[in-house]
Image 1 (cartoon, protein in one colour):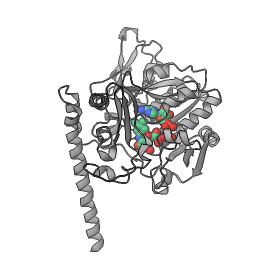
Image 2 (image 1 turned 60 degrees about the horizontal axis):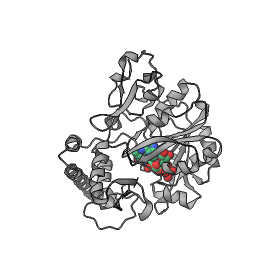
Image 3 (image 1 turned 45 degrees about the vertical axis):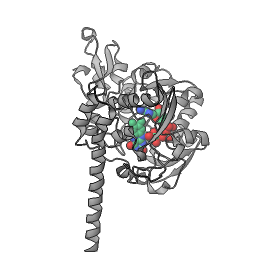
Image 4 (image 1 turned 180 degrees about the horizontal axis):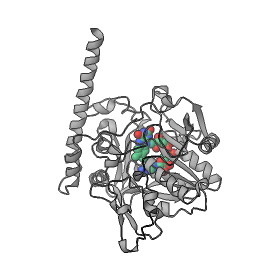
Length: 399
Ligand SMILES: Cc1cc2nc3c(=O)[nH]c(=O)nc-3n(C[C@H](O)[C@H](O)[C@H](O)COP(=O)(O)OP(=O)(O)OC[C@H]3O[C@@H](n4cnc5c(N)ncnc54)[C@H](O)[C@@H]3O)c2cc1C
């Protein structure tokens, strides 16, 4: 078996990185997710490396016997904290390791290709591009292939990318050269959403030059976990909203907030357009990781009044824990369930509008607003369900 029989996988690109014959390409499939293709089958020697490093084809995780320590954390540098998505821990781990002679393989937004991509940062100026979450699937191959296994690297990515990457460095017996960092991951949306969003945005501001998904102009707060997500349409609540997409173009810029009906976030967080693998086969929720360090947003009750950003951080190896302690970060140790409050414990549930949304996104005649009507319906349905459950609870209590 080689990777050509694998479809709707994680699209992590590690098979293409590992292939010594260079015959695996990673391209977007029809539904807008990265997938491997064999470009020249006659050159494949059936060595099996591509399937060996593939996390999608294994039930277990590549990191065994994990310990676990969990923290609330934030950068001591105010600018870093402001620029990053939550507390800036991802950036601070990178900065520490750069000072120790590592390079960082992180994710930047490439406005020329309208995509997120892994790249290598060799100094702090280059590292800045990796700050902040880009809520689209990243194209890993060029970044991963640029890694020299004999040198030291921090590699960051989604949990599935990191699980495959650990398999790869285990296979080549160079695990000690690497520190791996992932995050609590909701899932990745189809690239068709982002491509249509960009088309819509370009009508407003011209060719897009920059995008920041988690701009802190309106502070840092989770309207989603606090339940505002279901109330977002037509609301006039002025809520601190962490899901604030800042888009700059050649003719200007705009900020678009989740709580005021931003379409991209509507698609992403309503679970109408995630990858099939995110719904059916994500092994990495909550406590499950193959990284040394996991980061996320600490949305729980403990820090609910914080307006600057707090990262949830979990270390799974002694190496990860030691490094975290040496970062330029404030750390407060908490039990895991405090740090991971509101994080997903299971795969996202496919919305009943998944097919109709995807078909609309695939139709070149239709713009993003057409597919978005179904997302709105989904939100309304969820809002009514929530209200209904609340009424039932009240009735039960008053009996
Ligand atoms: C698709 C996606 C889904 C997420 N889902 C959740 C969730 O459900 N719950 C939660 O708490 N947090 C989630 N996060 C993580 C969260 O958005 C923040 O990254 C996290 O709070 C850490 O913030 P920070 O300030 O410490 O990180 P920063 O210092 O800003 O570092 C961000 C790191 O993420 C990496 N990165 C950015 N975009 C991508 C990408 N597209 N693919 C791979 N790596 C990337 C960068 O290379 C960098 O290392 C998600 C992130 C992404 C990209």
